[in-house]
Structures are given as structure tokens and as C-alpha cells.
Image (tube, rainbow, N blue to C red):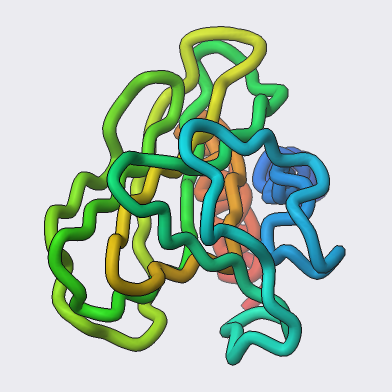
Length: 184
């Protein structure tokens, strides 16, 4: 009986760990370390937008800057996703406090963040969790900052472990606890 409990616990732990091991960033060049917008598509007004190295970036040495004047510009990337899977979207954002300015982050048409005239700030991390609806999802960032620049870095999209994987991990840990308890 003890061997069966240990076997079940071990299998459950292995499955739980394997299910949670899918935390790979699916964004390419999310920290702009190529020194350009490789893997990104520039959209709208691309004036006064680029990548600076070094850029006082929170991840690596480069960061993207955006200062389109008079209209919105931005970048987007089509990501390979799994319908029904939840994704954790994280990125670092910095505003200079200039007016007028705006920032919009979207994932598959869902607005993650919409900021008008954001106050001056150093880089801070913004986080959202969204469920994909298809096999590919567009991640987009739009900017306008007439008198200055908005900065972006460390863009990351990772799948969130599904509840079933977490349940398997919990069962495995309980089983291991029972097996150890019976030993004593």
C-alpha cells in the first residue's frame, strides 16, 4: 500500500511539474536587445520611435521609445497561442508626464491598459491575465507623446498553469505527505 501511495505521489508530482513548466515567453525580441524592432510590426505614425541601447532598461541594455506627434503609432506582434489558454502579459512602461500623451496595450482586441496623459514615472511593471480565443493572437502597443517619449521594455507573454495541473501538484504533495507520515 505504501509503495502505491508513493508511486501515485511521484506520478502526480511529475505531471504537476510538467504541466507548470510551460512558462516560456512567446514574445520574440520583447526586450529589444536586437537594437531594433525585429519581430515587431510598426503601425500608424512611426515618427520619433525607435530602440535605444543603452537605454536605462530594466531588462538587458536596450529599450523602445515612442513619441509620435499628432497621431498614434505603435508596434504589434502576432503570437502563437492556444485557444482557451490563459496568458500572463507583463511589460515595463515609463512615462515622461508630457501632455498630450496616450498609451494603449491590447491582446487579441482586448484592452489591457489605456492611459491618457500618464504621470511621469520611472519604469514600472504592468501585468494582466487574458484568455486567448484562437491559435494566434495579436499583442499591440499604441503610443502618442507629442512633446516627449514613452518607453517600453521587458515584454513577456507566458501561459498560466491550468487549474488541473495545479490540482495534480497538490494531490502529489498530499500523497507524499501521507507516505512520509506513515513511515514514522
